[in-house]
Length: 207
Image (cartoon, rainbow, N blue to C red; front, top):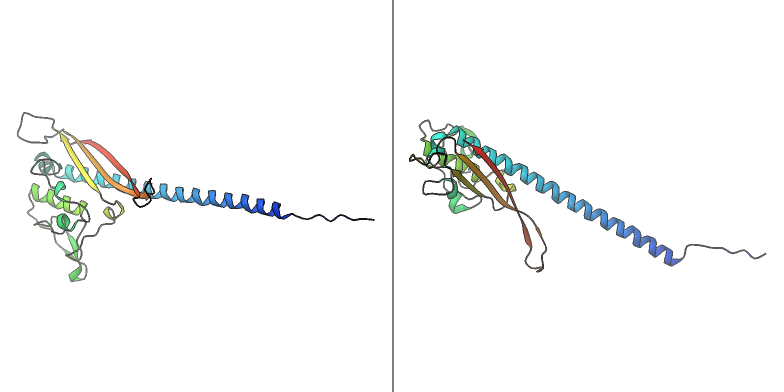
């Protein structure tokens, strides 16, 4: 009696490998997109925190806000003069440190804050601390927030509630805080010129 023995042919093995390979590639792509979205969500959370912190600094310094020191337009603005990770705009500390800070040269001892900061000096310090970060070595700037937001820029405008007075941003004005940064890079039509994703958050408050 003749017995036929059948096995798996080579073509069936190749098809199986192809299907598994496509599945693994899809899984890897899904994981990559998930990681990118998680990173961008983290950046957006950090940016919103920073925008809210700027608003709270303005709330704590109403005289500085009303004088226009926190706006990024006009000749009195302080935030427009500070750009994160820029040695020219962030390399120089404010004339007065209006909050206690650590001094690396003294073993991270706390240096007391100035007690006589004016509204303008407080706004200048706020801009430096939030946009540049504390200078622990007295030479470099460090901030876990701004380091996660590449090429961060702030645009702060005020819709003056009382145009009849001399103040550029009177009490009760609408403040618009826009933070813009570049996120992850991706390939565009030119492989040698990757495209950066432009991101921003916008916070509007009345102060």
